[in-house]
Length: 137
Image 1 (tube, one colour):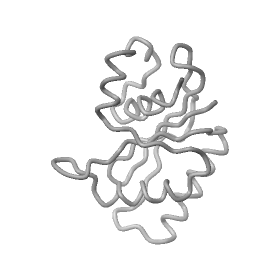
Image 2 (cartoon, one colour; image 1 turned 120 degrees about the vertical axis):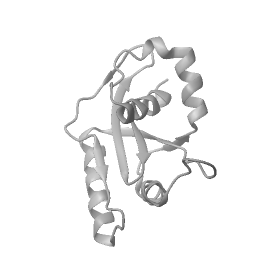
Image 3 (cartoon, helix red, strand yellow; image 1 turned 45 degrees about the horizontal axis):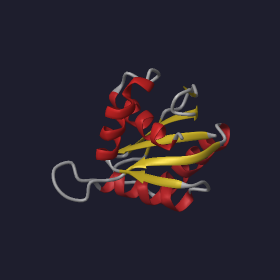
């Protein structure tokens, strides 16, 4: 089963797909790992984002999506771009979608960090990987 972690940050969605189990999984190589929308998106911009995201999901046979839960208050609270992307993904998702709190990611990392040998080195892709890892059984 292929699980895709979607890390939403600003007007970007970083994507990392994995398959397998927590103990034995692999990252699926992809030419696409970032989808963006403009800061002031039009309907056409959102349609293009949706088409690109759906194409990615079909190409990788995605069975589940895991997104980061947006902060609603305080420093770093989810901005307009993140809010728009989350709403779009909740609307178009044809597979189960779950939202994961950052505290959950930290707790999992403490318990099973040694199993994350394939974690990408870039920060945003690493967070998308952590989200996908949450979906593994």
